Image 1 (cartoon, helix red, strand yellow):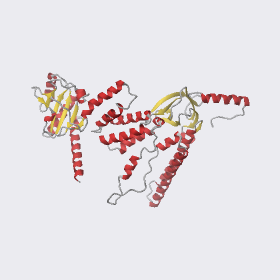
Image 2 (image 1 turned 135 degrees about the vertical axis):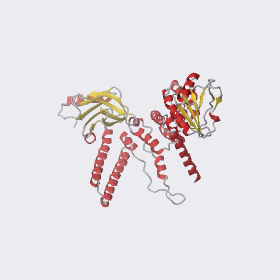
Image 3 (image 1 turned 30 degrees about the vertical axis):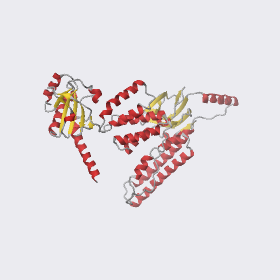
Length: 481
């Protein structure tokens, strides 16, 4: 228990009652924590989740007489909060945004099993569920332990039935909980962790066989049914972030058009709440802006054009201008687009353009004669060229306007067999025209001079072309079926 109760004079009771009323009406928050197992004098932090597996500190307190007192003049925003003992050890609880004054008592050996709350109906609900879940988890562990290493078919079947029964019990509890407490924050937290309920029977295709893709499509379509995107309290929890992350990792085909289509779908769900929308937009952008998967550069352009430049009121004019600048640079350089015009000259003043290339592939290699990485890459570039003569043409384009430095580089690193070129007439600002913000930067073009990849390291050019050809052959084989 939190307190020992004594017989108290009526006058003192009246005074305490009045004080408690005043305290309850005072704006701000006060959270008293008694946590057995935490040493006297230790400093702990109050924090909350923001996104998945990260948290933001709100307050600090020292254990005094066995108690942590977290208090402040501002109310706490709703979310999942943490009592942080160390970066790897913390205990979470809920703040619904209304219950700002509460007391928590537990211990570090079994926080969930022993926790008690005063002044928080939300946590009483949430931890009743968590205790039930913990009990069921221990029951499942016991059943699994009994059958481990035993090959008795009857025992294995009995184990399966027992595990199914436990899962059914959990599902039933969750449904009943949400039905009974649907307006609570605790119910929203629990519901956001529920998977869509799949149909028991599959529709049949024209040939009479079950449609094997139906379950996947159904699951994807209903993946967010249990997530309330209008409730920004879920931002201060790990649940919304992890749900969106799972969707794009496991359910979205990783090609530009599919990602853009699904991004639009998820952002439409998030739009009713600006803070949720802002976070989800950031999350998707962060995932794809510098993706290692080739060909997804168009995702950032799509998000910037359709959201940051049209519906991001939190951006100031300077930030918006930076997005506009990146779109202007990247839009003509997207995978699948024809490479922009580039007319550069050799040491004799003869002009060349990648459009003149007759080989199956064309590499446009931007380099700086004084760049250390470029010097390291030059021998590898020559090895790649010699291994692919007749198949590849390499335009070795210096971004430096110093003919002597270019000549020294060509002689030192023996790149004379390549087309060694520079912008003799000053037509280009390579950073803006071709997004060359570091060197070396490579573009790989197909026979139609469409960009099939960019920023592939020199030592990975061979691997990428082999991969690309396998993909093309598979595509042709599928089309022929």
